[in-house]
Image (cartoon, one colour):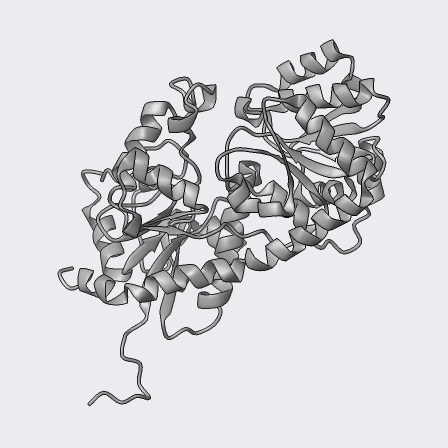
Length: 423
């Protein structure tokens, strides 16, 4: 008879993709790093009898960023490493392209000479887990994270159309290939789950709704906020913040129109728009000039996180007029710094934020302006939103997110073990 003091199962070997080191990915970067850091803390730096975490890196530089032992991970491109103890070695550099390191790369289609790469993965992990929509292979069980399916809902925006860097057909083929084959698809809301079933026929039993966590607030020793405010010529509580890359769907247009309404009513609020240019920045500058509000609009480009945090801590409110959603991270970050958020009312947004934010129609600038005016004049409302936001974040911790992933894995442990028998 089995001794109750001995574990019945061997630990599940879970391969997790190390996230991109490029912070210019914005909210995707923050989400992936938050999840990966929590996974390392829970399963890699502590011994677990249920899950053995095996980080998977694209190259040696990735593991240095996270202080990962190179003998306890898989490296797809070990060109800079000459240690035979690596679990995965001498893999062609072109395999990193197969991995979908760049969005839009075909994923799940194997290289003709990639059998060795697949065999090594199959022999060293039980299941792959990706915190983004890409995956290394569809030949072993895998979990992917679906951020949004906006190419099906709003295909007229250039970035998700046939004109996009990742074209409409590219997105469609990708999700049809991986979402339909996944052991499980992770989404942030019930709305996301229903879209996945509607558009790609994924059975609800293979979808887990796991609300996206909020990144931990950044605390920078010796960093003085006033130097950042002085550089951008803004005063504390005298500006609105909208951190977003300059894509069409980010709807900077609504923000400018709302600001014009406020300025025409006598307000001296400014609008700070940090973010990389993805094609619309010059048009936004021209629009601000046409409206006569260019002196009130600051677009500093991409900012390091410590500078962005200084803006979070000192803004009157965060506004988020994006047409895409839900599962947007910046409103959660605003809550973590005690700042109220005003967000666009899009399908699934109330499910994500509840009564912790104010909502507006993304097509109605006057709607946004009214909410901003309410934050400016009703201090009790502002304080109440901050309190509600803090309460929401207690349920959206990185630990809670990992709890749900772990529960999923352990619930299906026997099925995953069965999948390894014929390898």
